Image (cartoon, rainbow, N blue to C red; front, side):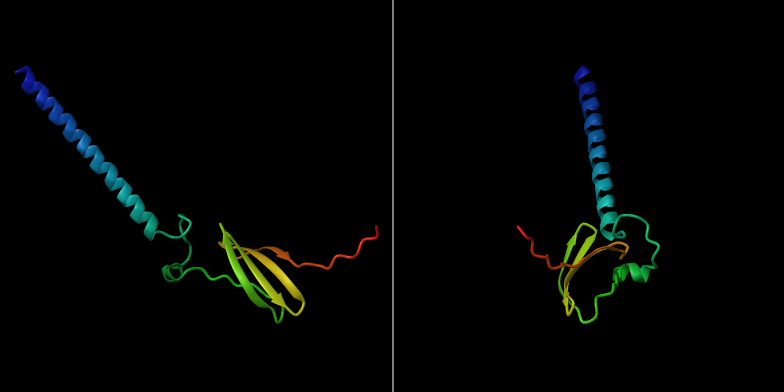
Length: 114
């Protein structure tokens, strides 16, 4: 009789642990699907669904006659290297808002007298 009670209790424990594993896997699956189908950034989007599906559009002004040489993304910063008649330059934008953060233009260094 004692062995039967022990077996019954073990079956209850195993069934409970199995149920906990299934609930945990279900929660992970729901979270993965939510992250995969949700908006970029994980927050609520104020854009309409059609715009959110197409992705954001960022526009900025280049100097007249300038051409984009390269674009680099790091985190939420977008660096755009451009070259034009007035010389090369680098513009750094916030990729989420499109706000210009920094405009870098090289200048010629004057010779130093020793």
